[in-house]
Amino acid sequence: MTQPTTTTGHPRGLYVLFMAEMWERFSYYGMRVLLTLYLIKSLMKGDNEAFSIYAAYTALVYAAPVLGGKIADKILGYRIAVILGGILMAIGEFMILGGTDHWLYLGMGAIIVGNGYFKANISSIVGKLYEDGDARRDSGFTIFYIGINIGALLSTLICAEVGDKFGFEYGFALAGIGMILGIIFFIIGQNTYRHVAEPPHPEKLHKAYLGPITQFQTVVLGSLLTIPLLYFLILNNEVVGYLLVAVAVYVIGSLLMRGIKEGQVLRDRMIVFIILMFFNVVFWACFEQAGSSLTLFAERNVDRNVGGFEMGAATTQFFNPLFIILFGSIFSILWVYLNKIKKNPSIPMKFGLGIMQLGLGYLVVLLGNAFVSPDYLVPLWTLVFLYLLHTTGELFLSPIGLSMVTKLVPKDMTGTAMGAWFLSFSASNFVAGIIAKFTGVEDSAEGVVATASETLANYVDVYSTMGYVTVGIGLVLVIFSGLLNRLMHGIR
Image (cartoon, rainbow, N blue to C red; front, side):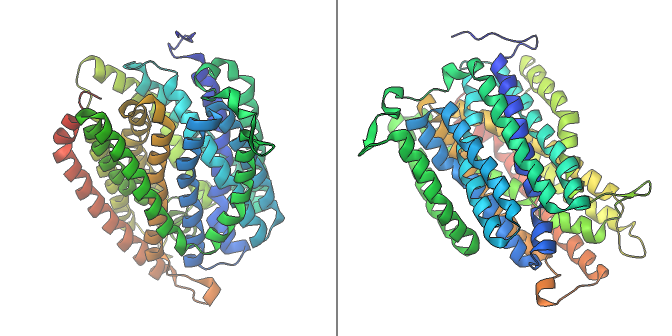
């Protein structure tokens, strides 16, 4: 079915999804940007305990789409799944306002379940707006990605500063309001995407399934009953690592079995998909220090004074979404142009170059350390250039990865594969928490307070090591990108 397009040449539904995702990301990042500081300053957790809770939460947030995508594929359809997810996320944001560990963990549980339905499935709708082989798809995902980052930018400027200046609860409340706005935009504009987002078997959805309970009611009830389980997992966060391994074995096995069943071409594509998932873990495990160790680095060892105004430590996370917005359109145009002149780098090559830029970003800390002040504060431009290189690396990798998923897999398993892709983000966040602990030299919960010189020395050591290692890993992928590209059998 040919879709009405806007003056930009993209389907109108793209811009509805853009707005819904923008406000959902405002909500998610509005809470996340404050989380580490809230755990340490308000709930009096030590560095390592805060990192463990943060890592478990963010890992489960990105693992949830594995199940949420499958339920959307088989039962709910993408539209209903996204609406249900948005409602649960809004409820979770407002639960956090209770101000205790108990309410925080319950709210986190609701947000995790909601994100499982929302995140993978709204991306799946974007992919389905384009026909197979449509060259606009990469550009469309990059535009969508700009919406994600406008939401992230607004949250880091508004929620972070409000939370820092007036109290964390006000920042969390704004995040909840943002989620409500996202749901409203999604529902109002549903006619622009509804044709590709309906349930696979709508006639079964509201018929009795378990006794008098319908399929839809069963899904909702199961979702609510999952929240206490997630509460337990956040409290016992070491279990999350084992859970991720079990889910990864199942998902990777499913992808390989489907590939083997369909023949050599799909088998090879599934192999490349799995390999790139592992490289995705490398990138995001280092990138996702932003909300944890890099925020504490900004709090303890970065001069945040700008013209007499002291920027909040959480607010320093705004550089990444700002650079995405500034450069996202340029990259979107660049990929289309390079595709026309047949010079567009392959997907594996883009991944390798993106990882190398991430590593160079961490090496900027070495340069900033050469300009350290007498009180052991590095200049703010250290974070500016670090986030700049992380952002250009991200633009080589993340929107391209989302588009890749919709190209490599059969249409009937798009949601499942998108869930698998987000599973790699889940593993990244869990590994990110392990990496962050190497920087955790200050533990106020145990009465240990490191000096500024000690914290700075540790940050410089850990970040420079990450930089050298990731540049090397990216280079390896660049070298082998030609082989991986051949296994994709024409997908670019």
